Length: 232
Length: 278
Image: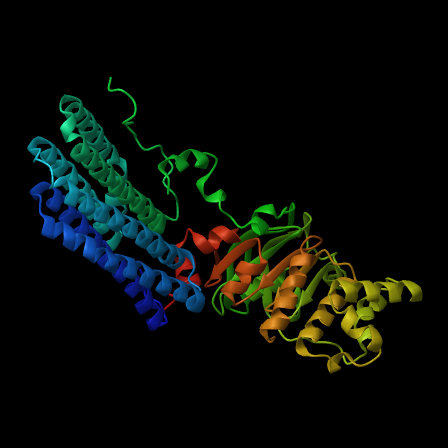
């Protein structure tokens, strides 16, 4: 792509996207640490995830201000307009991911009070890795403007849903088998749900990246599996 | 972005979120149709193979860098280029299906049907009233009482009446730049044209006068076919329903304005409207 004739405009747009990428890195780290805290029952790590969430909130505000300023002062059009609005929307999704990671960390502080349930945390670990790989993939797609990678993240979201569904059933089995585990299992269920929602935000970002690059929305129906339906 | 939003988009993804003003615009049938138009100024070719249909009751913006041919194209539509020695036009331009370059067609009559507003307001050195009445007089279009009515109606339609009603017989050049431009528009619409061509009509005006002209253009588009050449992307985006992008004498891309400014198809269009032309 050619550069803008006005160099400072080019710089501002690039800075906006760089800030978004940086925020993405932070959201990724928060998610990774939150999952690690649950899996390793690490109270200190959970505490630090909770403490670091504010940075994401601040960055989101910063990106929004920069984008609004750019719209006001530069009147971006076409792909520039899509990039500017895309940065704002991606920042919103990343901020939500941060909140969900923080929520996982908070629940960790309760979960560690109960007896360890190793098979369950192993499932959480697997699901966490999958969601993290999606998040990483979509952020790479964003920074490299790689549409194919974005589309790949979008079409593969059902794998995350499948993990969630199987964890859901696993947790039900535990809770029915031993009602003393209900508190911890209920929290783990929310942890799994939060991870599933982080996966959804990754697919949202994939849609935004697709729109930024092509100017078209993704229109085909994404495969969905529903946790509320009994397994067939 | 909810994933189930996909089903909302079955009828066409790009047509949902468009600005209501653009979406509601009832664009009319084709008023002017250019087919394979080449224009030469002596040896130099200014337009290459331009084909473009221009809708009635809509504003079409012609955009592009200086020297791209957009003003040349505009001037073809009322044979203003006839006045330039050595200018040769190949191809066909139709107004309601009639060839405007037909030898039998009187260019003076054509220009009554296809009016023009220029970059700098050019009132005649006459009174406000006579400026508006001028076209009616030379075409013998009205008697004395009709004349006064048409002048008033034209000034009203151009949004100038309330400002000049008490000084119709003072000189047109005593008005401000924005008022002069509206006076010239009143003069153009007094002869009941079908098409109004505007060549950068706001480039000499301040933002408030510009806004009034843009509001006027938006009102006039319900009755006329309007074609505007502008260097302001923002103005093209604000006033037009269709946009055509010219580059190096060629028509690169034409389409709905909202689509041209959010998702142009051609990279040259994108580079131009986003300020990337090297």
